[in-house]
Image (tube, rainbow, N blue to C red; front, side, top):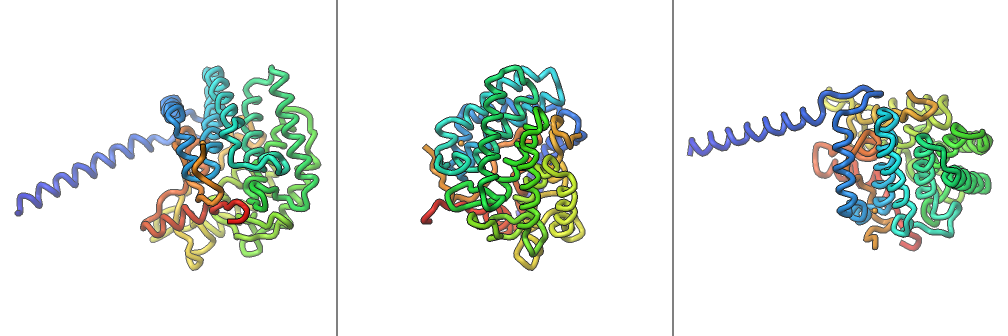
Amino acid sequence: MGRIRWALRIVGVGITLVCVVAAGRFLLPQPGIADQPGSTQRQLAFVRDALDDGADTAAQGMFPEGYVFLNALYGLAWVQAAHTDPDLREPALRESRWALARVESDEGRAVFSPRLAPAYGVFWAGWSNWLRGAILTLDRSDPAEVRAFSDRSAELAQAFTASPTPFLQAYPGQAWPVDSTVAIASLRLHDTLFDARFATVVEQWVGAARAHLDPATGLLPHQVSAADGSPRTGARATSQTVILRFLPEIDPAFARQQYATYRDQFLAYPGGFGPALRSSRTASTGGAISIPARWWRESACPPPWSDSARPGSTATPNSPRRSGPRANYWACRSACPAPSATPSAWYRSVTPSWCGRRPPGC
């Protein structure tokens, strides 16, 4: 019996050492913000293989934006890689255009309504426009691509101008500020690359967003009324990490204020360890500790092109948002909270945080 115990201990120690070495090889050394991780191309090749094998369609079975998210982040990862390493420009253009075509395909638009303004809702319109603009930071030689970016941006601007609330609908009768933040950032990107055509729309949006903050936190809410923009769900760490990645593109001063408030409301040192982030504002609200703060730094780091630099779907809008495979900083860290210490805490930190989007009538 004693020998069996010792054998089990040795096996346990061996497995632990293998896990520690594997984690170290994956995490270390950490590249600087402006550095290109040596494994970037291998990771991107892995994600492309997964996409070819249907990972985006599988992700769509997990949450209603899975197909779009996975392809958009893959394309954006390639764009960022090319800005860091100019030798990757040609494969980056090829792969990011391939990703954009998938986002704009019938499958990419299947769960979104063409009757919304903008067509297919602000989530689809915002992310597809941001990806299109990002591709143009690498190559603006095709007039058709430039014209498409300008036309899509104008459609977004018109929708914001006509809306009584700064937060447009992603699905009929449902709105999340994070989606409008991405869309407004794409308008700012347009004005950075071309003429300052949408500055007034952007500035008006910032003013309206300031007037619709979550009163409990002073941050942009997680979910709002589609009718008047009033908060339905207070600020959550997961949507905030995406919002605060894009706000510096829109209004750096507003972004600094929101980030300072975010740190004050969500930063935590559980048991003296950390830093980490709460999924909701305080421990008393049931917020689980999640998302190592290092992930926030990387997801918040603007890409090199920005002014402030430096997936037959089975999912419906009732499915909880979750995350897909990882590639570069863009493709891995902006949208996936880390599991917390216990299964119940993990479930709380992931499932409610991704908002459980519902179609009308559900």
